[in-house]
Image 1 (cartoon, helix red, strand yellow):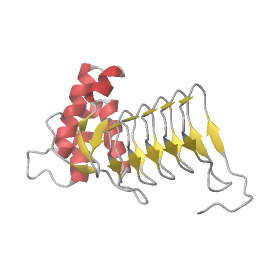
Image 2: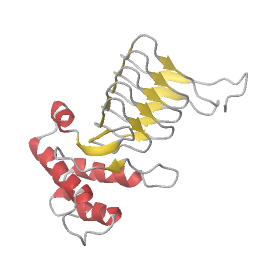
Image 3: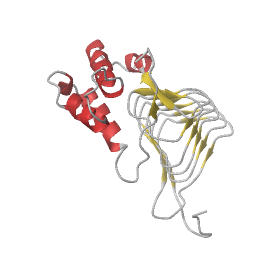
Length: 205
């Protein structure tokens, strides 16, 4: 709808991408922007990447993953089949989206979401192990996740309070991965962002 006939618009695709059959990737909607695909991505059959999306590197988009306009996918994210992502959402690095999910808000780094309206289901533990995160890093991320999304202390405050507690925790705050997850969550609540997918308690976190 934004495109004006005759405008020169852009698509930039990096190296070593495998783009399978019936995939559609749209150029930007305006000359001042561009759709970007990074390096080493696997984009399986019948996926759609709309105008002005920014897809990083080393991602796996399984069959019929549909990204609406202006979606950002960071690095090492993985979608199962039949995933739909609402425009302007951000999919964090090392996250996983379950099959058939409809994602209408941001997915923070390292986290699994799934559901007809996708909800947080815990950490992407298997993905983190496969990508070489240490046992101590994963343990610290699990502890941070619980403090943020599964607080046992009724006086723990709102989510910003809990993010600050994790950020300044004498042990957890030392891990860059924990700090990165905290920042990913906090950024999702910035102006013009969509917030994060709703939380649902899950024993695998």
